[in-house]
Image: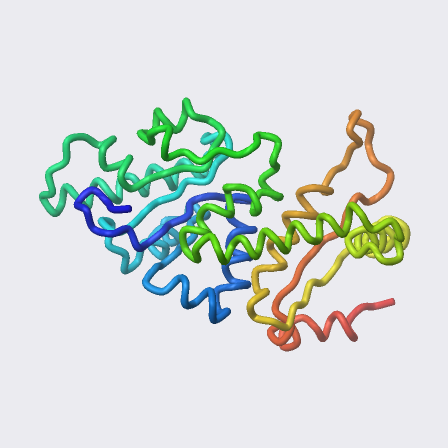
Length: 276
């Protein structure tokens, strides 16, 4: 795939927020230093853009040639304010580059369509942005953002960067744990069910109001933010499904850092600092 001036597109900027970002960066960080992943991604660059702070945009685009950059906008509705602000900023970045370098182009939509694609369920909005339907990758509209890393939201950018053969292995692993959860009848051997029950017991029954996530593998440095969204966005409710106020805690505060870093920042409080 090439950009407007037929240079190969070797850079990828993924624009999204929440589930359109956290799970993807977690998986990227988790696998990127594996030898097979490093080899398969050779010559390509991937950046993530979520914050509307201009500094984040500057960091995401630093050192990249716009003519070799593909921009992927992840948004189910294509109306999320932060995502669309960054998408418009990215489009302006592309157009400004071509204008400043006196590269003639027929119209803005041609540049947009060469450099920007989307993962979305809202074709009307993506068309209005200038992205043709064939460059919009869909997914089921019932997929919540926090669970979307195994949908096109996550699989497309990760496959572009690492190749689908690598990401197929990730999907196979996700499928294996899904099947384990669904088919393991003995609760004592059902790992996801046990983890869920333990979490419920600690938070709702014992009233432990926080959980530390402390991976010692640097590859899992983005696990805590991903888990924060999976659990606290899913269960961070104050009312039941029919609008009645809860009289118990639905979930606790989840926080964490890679373990070695945490040892030299907040472990002292965890081990010795609480007043009983």
